[in-house]
Length: 387
Image 1 (cartoon, rainbow, N blue to C red):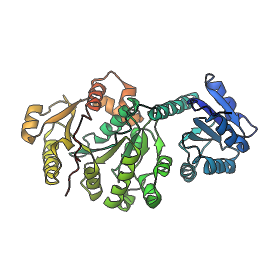
Image 2: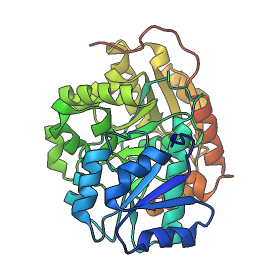
Image 3: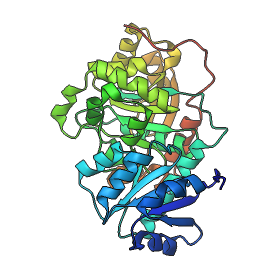
Image 4: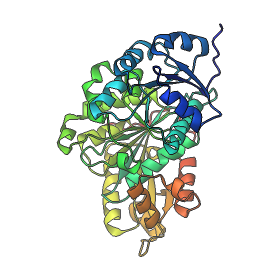
């Protein structure tokens, strides 16, 4: 039989005689093409149908699920490998990710969970379709003039907007190594972090990287910061630079939340970036720190087009006028993001992107304009500074 290579919505459920997962999915999504295979028949089923989504039910057959992933995930890299169970310890989840698992589906099945899962699958399919701008590979660092300016909020929502625009594969990595909040902002439970990745640095490749990331429903791949603050010391500037090379090769867009402290690792991120988004707010303390950051970037010989100054919380009460701010800094404001403290707070507390809470808010509209104008045609010269 000639394999059908167009089954983007075809799901192959791999389980024993219980049929729990197979029947559960049928009951929730009647329109999906769902097939079932026993563990001994998986390769035959894949050869015949080339199913894009393979869900292994490990609830009763953990050893069989491990063996299938170990044996077949590398042979069928175009399939979206998923593990389904009632719960996994962090160590087990990491093990399955290393074996090729891209996603997890919890049992018993919940309609909302399945809906979010299918959105992730659809986003993954869109990113792999012909016509995507796969020639674009850029690293963007989000750096703030001081703490509390909103760099994480902007980085997170920029990543979500890029993914939903179908701009290609998007990675969001948290390089605020001691107290990063990217995972919380997206309601992602950290399983595999930057620190875990450093342990596999010598053998890291695209497959290992993909298996080390957590998928958000928007389509963004997330790599959280280390779980313990003291672990930050284990990620050196050299280690960071090596990781960023792999990230850039594997993703169209690699977004880094760098925070506001100028460490050696942060500098490695900024140096490797094609674009640095410098966040500031229209108040005097932020203005002073922004001036210092721009002075540092000049010393590093970053070209003007590499650094974009973005004004967050525009129209906040008591703000410094934009013209005065630009004159004081001797640097133009590239974008202005509207002030909406309440929406930003709700988003952070609930772990839900801004646009999902209120797509018509002025803040969301200004973010959309920012993302649309983020990448303009540029010269072929490298924008990287040296120091």
